[in-house]
Image 1 (spheres, rainbow, N blue to C red):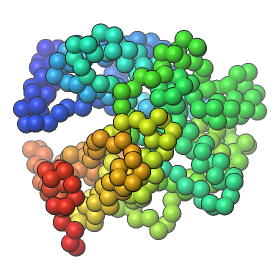
Image 2 (image 1 turned 90 degrees about the vertical axis):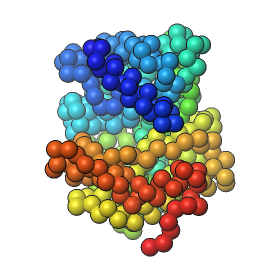
Image 3 (image 1 turned 30 degrees about the vertical axis):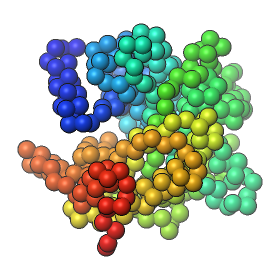
Length: 383
């Protein structure tokens, strides 16, 4: 890496620390170097070792100042939209195998990076390493339907469990996921399951490789059982589910993001009950506004307030071991396939101006009160 780039990150980290801000650094957030993607990206075993080398460099270079690390942000999204559906970079459409292979290598890359830190740096730097996992909450479309109840289990297993089960529990994929993909692979004439297998040595390497649980939550879905046996092999058809939105849930901007604050509380309780009651940090949560976005975004702040109230219930009623919460995001930014017209920021950015001026939304001012007082008491609850 060029010295000027190292100097840039050192200055950024120093400025954060000087202002009383503890950096939590993500090593990979959808930003694969093209030269590595040309060699196969996350579908290639080579990338596991390249990522491990990269993590070693970052730990060695910045670890005297950075004590909190995330290896990979939302590997489920990277695998599904990058290597299965082709909607995100690198834009590969390889249904049925691409997502599973990419995820397999990301899990191994994460685990190896964790071991590098704990073997070489933990003793002197005293930091912590995890991985950020995204998940919707899921409810059965028909609560009385056993098929819908089982569909909910598959939906969560194929989203959160895909990564949390091997990393936090067993070193291997959820049994329901292994069984389903194996059966569907056989049905379609494959000689083996399309889901890669971990060796016994790899299971030992992967299991327990997170020092805290990073959870990204945006929305909730109602889940129906749907027989996809006649469909082409793929991640979505393997689940045998249909995910739908409740029309009564508000949608403030981006079409997939229905506002369901209570879903986060239920998801936190699920994490507590199924992944050994870990220390949890909500590393992404937010609500988009479509252009033109009003600066007086009272309704969006109300969604944040309702969500934080549900988080408090999770802590005080459900005894969830939640230690931190991050809003997505500080600034309006480039939202992948949606470009600049979906605004998640607490600060408005004028993308039409060369200077990119920033102006706080009302939600920024209200959130400032919350974090300065460490509670909701100071936020404006008036309409």
